[in-house]
Length: 128
Image (cartoon, rainbow, N blue to C red; front, side):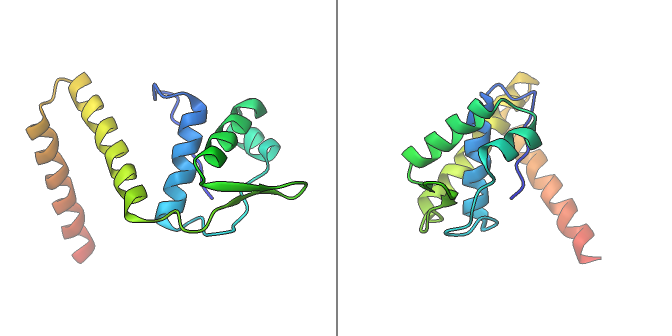
């Protein structure tokens, strides 16, 4: 499971970790009953305080995204890849894109046009 943090992101680090795990579940890179890295291992990898990772894991457990087996670790919960989670993922991406666009002085229409243009270019490159 790949977790990347953005130091420019205004969201707290633990929220970014929660969102990355949620994304992995929705995309299928983290399947039901797959183990998550230990708190210590993930903290070292991400260069964050282990308490930050613990906070993220507690939040994921509270949301029903993961469960803990005492002495064995933290595991992904089955059944979290439904349409509601996918919609929540899309909403989060849209909110961040809109926030970034507004911060840079772009209107919604300009952002949508740029996304469509980029997607068309990418599709054309893939068809070659």
